[in-house]
Image (cartoon, rainbow, N blue to C red; front, side, top):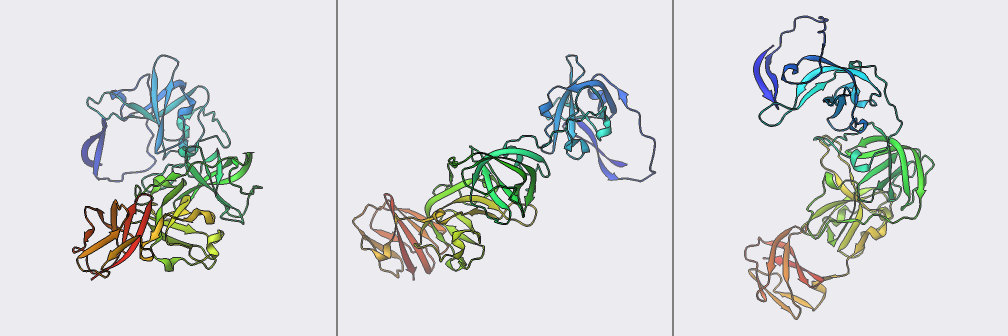
Length: 427
């Protein structure tokens, strides 16, 4: 091998230029028995004898790898790093006393590099004897199981687990199961089964204990159940996370599987996108500051409905994801459940249809005049997609629109808890 000698977190490395293959099946080096780890053991094949785990809970099987501490019964403890790329990562912890072999490493982020020495086993044969603890479906909390890596891939993929949460939503897959369980802190995970309901009929408010396997489909982390136990029925749903008046511009991974509401006045960006023909479809909705995708499934009441009456609606539902390509960082949408999840906001009035607020002339070229007896605190100028272009605090009854390009706009006027929407044509 040829290359440059480098260092990372105290560990000496070689930055490769070239590798010349010499032969295979060369003799394996003999490990050295040691009773301490330090600079002299770095990058050596080592063995610690007659050690046991300090804390079995450190053997987590999560993330890109995990550290456990072992001790020989003295006051000394040694760090053993179980990397996600070795077979030990997916195994149960070793019980009792054992010998452990591995390569001496170091991970020390600050100068002087005199700490952070580790032992890195290569495979399960490096622990002897390996009296593996095997537990079917160990218990985990939901947020531990829903972390993802930089590509959006679920860290716990394939893990057999037991978790508990409250059922939220309808059954989006009547031939099997598709709903969410969410804990008291609004951390959720989708429950999915292709064609087997494992004896459970979905009802919101059931507190469930589920045994199953963590899976992922199009970026959505899910548990495929093998057993569902109903602990209690008719419990309250978690309080939905309020996405706020423009406080959240768009959905991302941090909102996946959360129960949410957006109670500001939202409009369909493209009313023609509302199919209403019994199929599943998605629509974009905006309030000018935030734009959210809303998913309408064929098994919901909305699938066969015309566009909801009234232009302005609040949205409630559960955030799901459907992204077919890595990295899984898009495709987030609010899944609505039933007709009350899209409700008309009564405090929004079409200003064109009332004498409470008049704006003239319309069409206008440079100046708009406002005629109203109401106290108007602010005016938003929105484009046809609902995106906010300007926010105006009124100081007179005239509005300067000379900087707007010719075209159609919406003006949203705020008076207390009431909003007035006025359509405007700029000449």
